[in-house]
Image 1 (cartoon, helix red, strand yellow):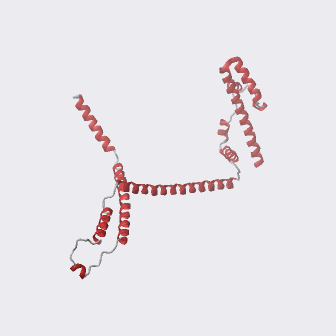
Image 2 (cartoon, rainbow, N blue to C red):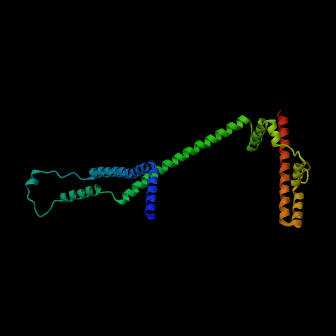
Image 3 (cartoon, one colour):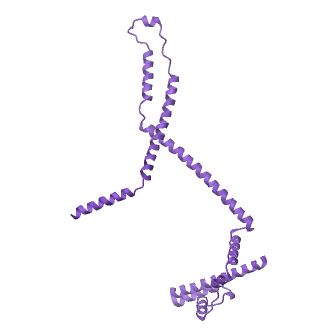
Length: 250
């Protein structure tokens, strides 16, 4: 009973999944198969017509029948004309025979080559269009904003963004430590003031001393503090440069 139920359930699920299959899949399969069969057949038909035309042009005309040839009895020696006609008939039969696998493969390979050439040409045109568009947009932006490189463009965009932000939002994003706990956390991350400067030689000495005293854990905490101090110093320097540029621009 359970086997029958599972079989019915599997058949119903397979039927449901079959219904869910879109009609586009069989349609695309039929179209693709038709194209794959039709293209080689058309090419073979053209090749056959060209071969038949050349054979008809190259074959000798039939012999002219005269009254003496009709009245002459057939002797033991045969005329050479039937041999020529048999050869031409065999040639026509071979030309009208069904195409082989090699001809089909060559036709398909020619079709693939032409389609690949078309794809390469389309890809080249698209690449040229994208390149021309990118160069045009870059030149237009540089001319409109008056910038020379990507760094200057980034600084100008940052200044524009900061000037567009409201003052209360800007102060909440870049607010100094207000409480004692925040101030203690800031100095715990970087025990010296950023205005005094940060030097890698002194930081390397502190890292070495931390590793000698506490091993890798203390060295990792000290490295984190040094990285925070360097980042804070870099932020202060960038902010000072931006303020100076804003003052000079105004």
